[in-house]
Image (cartoon, rainbow, N blue to C red; front, top):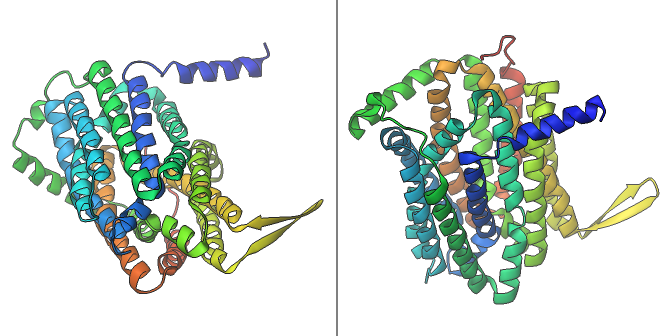
Length: 436
C-alpha cells in the first residue's frame, strides 16, 4: 500500500472510530427525525392551503413555531444542566411523535396552530441533544465528529422528498400528506424508543451551580446575554447585522418556494419532489466540502462567493415564470432545459451557496468570539436571529405573497442579500489573530 493510500485508510478509520456509543445512537435517531422533517417539508405549505388557509398562513405558522422554539430553547438549556440530558431527550422525542399525529388528523388549518405550538414546545430537548453530542465526541476530534454527524444525518434523509412524492401520487395531496405525518410520527416513535434504550446519560452529577430556581436562572441568563452583547467586537456586530438581514429575507421565502414553483412557475408535484431531492443531496455535500474551501480562501471570500452564487440563483428563479425553455450552448452543440430542469440547477446552486455560507459564518464567528464568551454569544446570536429575522421575516413573506405580489418575497431576498453582501465587504474584516 502506498503512503497516500495508507493515509486515506487511516483517515477513514479515524472517522469510523467515532461511530460508537452515544454518537452512533444520535446519528441513527437524528436521521429518523430528519427524514420525518424532510417528508413533511416537501408538500407542507400546499397542505396548509389545501385545508382552506389563506396564503399568508404558512408564513404565520412558521413565525409562531420560531417564537415558541426560541423561548423554549432557553428553558431547555436550564433543564439539560439541571436534570441531565437523556430524560428530556427521550420524553420530548415521544412528544414529537404525538405532535405529528395532530397534523395528520387536522380537520382545518386552524387545528395546525395547536400542532405547531405542541411541536415547538417539544424542542425543549434540542439544547440537551446538542450538549450530549459535544459530551460524546473527544475534544480533539470534534471537527471530524460534527462533519460526520451532519453528513450522515442529511444524506440519510435525502430520499425523503421521493417518499413524499410516492404517498401524494397514490393518495392525493391531503390524504397523502396525512399519511406523511403518520409516517413521520412512526419515525419519531422509533427514534424515541432507540434513545430510551441505548443512550447513556453524560451528566453524571448534578451541577451545583445550576441547582437554583428557573426564575433566578432566567434572570442570570438575561444578564449574561447583555454582557455578551456589550463584549462583541465591532466586526462581529456588523457580521451579525449582515446575517440577520439575510436570515430575514430567507425566512420570507422558506414556506413559499413550493407555492411559487407549483402555482406560478407551473411545475408538477412530481417535478417539485425531484427539485427538493436535488437540494437535499447537494446541501450536505456542500457543507462537507465547504470546510477546506473556507480554510483555503478565507472566511470573507467564501462569504462573498456564496452570496454571488445566491444572487445568481435567485435572479434565475424570479425570471423562470417568464421563460418557456432556455437553450444552453455547449462545446458539442446545445441543450434545451425545461422549467423544472432550470429549477433543479437553481436549487443545487442555492444548496451550494447556503452550504458554503453556513460554514463560513460559523468559522468567522468562532474567529471573532473569545472562547470564554462563545457559548453565551452564540446563544445571543441565535435568539436575535429568531426574533429579529425569522419571526418578522416569515410574517413579511406571508403578507407580501398574499397581498402584494407572488414574486415580492424573492425579490426582497435578492435585494437584501446584496445589501448584506455590501455590509460584509465594507464593514467586516477577518481578524489577523483568530480566537482559539
